[in-house]
Image (cartoon, rainbow, N blue to C red):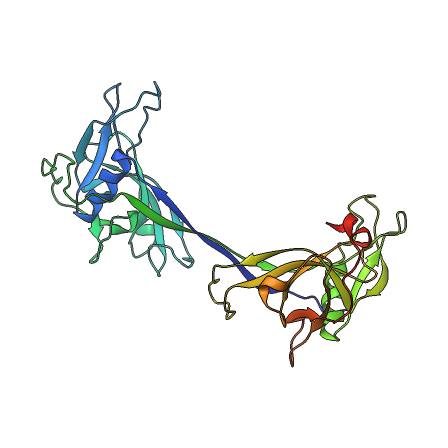
Length: 313
């Protein structure tokens, strides 16, 4: 049986957003150990606060402080915390209705085990030692058997309110290529580029997909393409990517390898970025031990005629 390939992958990007007056007050309040909600038109206090009434859709700005103590309304035990979660040891996800609020806030509860958690139990906020104006300023909730805490009477006005946040969206997963891409990857380890030909339209797809995207039929016939090709289009990169040791500016291009009917992408090197052009003839450059080309460089051949690659743009 052929080797089943798999690799851990992560997709992550920072999302920067500005805050309106309600969310600004809520997050700034957390930084100052104050929990704020909003009073809706129907009289209910919503925590976390929202900017528009969920019943009437009217804008709401009436901030009100609630207590840092509350009651668990429902919960679920987390046996195996993942990266970035509030606690590194097993904990309970809980919905907590803080005293003075009519809705529940989702957060972590630090408890020794699931037998120590129950609906209706009393809890209180455990504040993070260092706070910056984020939901993580609440480190977690903890069991509490004392008297309900009262609000301090804060108005929700802050001299140095937070105006924006950066949130990181991340997806961790394990990728396992199918038969077609596994064949493609194995060929690359031998410094060959292999595509597959559609039995119907006869087009050669690189990288192969296991099926023709046009005809919808399975592909299996291997076709070796390249090693030279033509730049069909390109872009100049001026922003340095995290964990990528390449000085900017540099060029990323779509390259139609000879014999292929689909352009793949790769970095162009060995030429000043402002001399890269459509039709430039290039070839792969491999580094020792690499499983794929490091970049593509000019071959010195005359540029390809536009009509030879216009269908691949």
